[in-house]
Length: 131
Image (cartoon, rainbow, N blue to C red; front, side, top):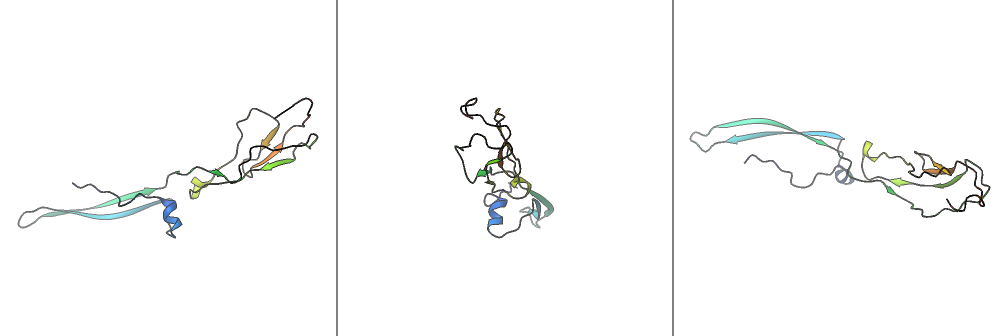
C-alpha cells in the first residue's frame, strides 16, 4: 500500500532518557523501492526524507506545592515570602518556563525566573484580614 508507519511512539525525551541524543529537529533519509511482479520485473526508487520535530508534550510541575504561607504584619516591602520551584520533562526550549500570578491582589509579586514571591506592599492586619 505504500504506507509508512513507526514501529512505536516517537518521544524525544524518552530517547534522551535512554542515552540517545536527538536534536530538536532531526531527519531520516530512506531509499524506497517499488517492484512489480512482471518478467522481467521492473522497479522504481525514490529517496524520502522524514523530519522529526520535537513537541511540547509535558507540562511543568511544581516541585514544592504550597497551599498557605504565613507572613508577619510589618514585614518589609520587598522581603521574600516563599520560593516556588518547578521542573519540566521536556528538552530544550520546550523545558523553559516562567512563573506568573493571575491574582488581582497587589500584596505580593513573583519573580518570573526565580519563583520568589515577595511583598509588594506593606501589610496591616487590622486593615486587611486575609490575603
